[in-house]
Length: 205
Image (cartoon, rainbow, N blue to C red):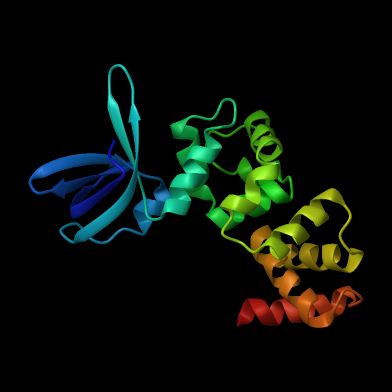
């Protein structure tokens, strides 16, 4: 199995790249988010690889980090989610945004990905809820706050602050992260106005 490729980026397509490794060109399928972060053609590249072997083909999927590959595999543990759907989700959401959407049980955020319907979105947030902390790249406190908000047990001031920050255009992940920091600074008794002010300061830093 191929777990990593290091070579020269030969070309970039809409859904894949060609990596030249000592004269051999490997076709590697990537998410749009990964494609957008690649160097220019002709430059050196190193990618984490997941190899899928089928009866009629071998496909390579490339990622910038092992965390991205872990999420790719985790998503496919959900019924009805294959490689194509997993890449679609990863094209739309970062690892942190995906973790936040699952912790908040926000299926609407998942269905922003092209081709992801409400049923699949609901299965993803439901089946992966208990697996988020190990794959999120976020701190336990941030995810704990997100989960508490989703379960309706977070302090009202924190929930209100996250909601206001969301209305200002920040993602659920960004808002929960900022309010988590604000809570650490101001304490559990802080009101929503104070958390919003501190949260905005954190987001602006």
